[in-house]
Structure formats: structure tokens, C-alpha cells
Image 1 (cartoon, rainbow, N blue to C red):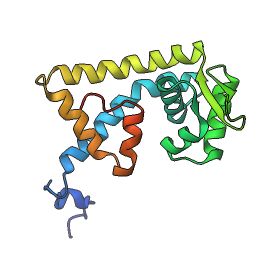
Image 2: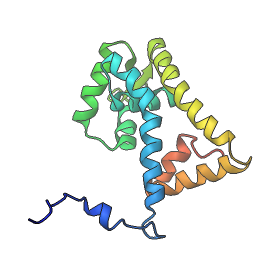
Image 3: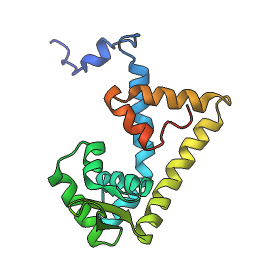
Length: 171
């Protein structure tokens, strides 16, 4: 009688080695780092009935008070419809307020409320701690290298946005 066939995952037979053209180690590390970086914030957001899209909006509205909705759409690369749902929830729950533009009445400018700034501060504290702990374990010049690496991951046409948001000041 033949031995029962064992189900084997093809990855167990032929693991793909990391190469310069396929940096699987870095890709895997990105997965785990992103999972852990977002995990604490996800739990806090979930208690508010929010998700990562809400966090992204809160991040940019806090980073640039008075940001026009059009700029936020451009940064997040999402549809008006997707943003409208998230923004409506943040406004209805008192985290963000929307004001009409001064020079262009069609413009909708976004501001975090006190409640929105507080939630942003709590969400950012755990993430900042994780980043600061990781960078403090590296040589002094490493922060600049990390920033340059992350900027290099951003599409070239979006790098001007990083400058406008003052995210590349450390370079």
C-alpha cells in the first residue's frame, strides 16, 4: 500500500532566495514593521468606529491645518466619494471641521478640532515611540539615511508634495 500523500506547500519545496532584484528580506520586514506600526493605532481607531482612512485624514489635517479638500484628495489618491464618507464621519463626530475658503468660496478647508488634535496626538504617540526607539538603536546619522530611503520609495512625481508638507526637512 502506498504511503498517504502529504500536502506540501510549494514554498516549502522551493523557497525563493532574496536577491538584489527581489529583496524578499526587506519586503518581509516592511510587512512586519507596517503591521506593528499600524496595529496600536488600529485598535484605538476601532474603538471610535474608525479605520486607517480616518487616521490618514486626521494625520494630514493636523499636519497642515486649513488644507483644501482638493489637496487631500491629491495626496491620498482616493476618489471624492471615498473621502466624502470618511470626512463626513470625522466631521459628524467632532474631529474635523470644514470651512469655506477666504479667497475662493468654492474651496473647502479642513481643520482638526480640539478633539481631532487630541486623537491625533494619542495615535501619533505610540507610532512616534516605535520610530524613535528603532532609530535610537542606530548610529547617529541613521535617521537621515532612513528618511532618504523612504523618500526613495515615493514616486518621483510625488516628492514635491513631501517638500510642501515639510517631510524632507531632515535631508
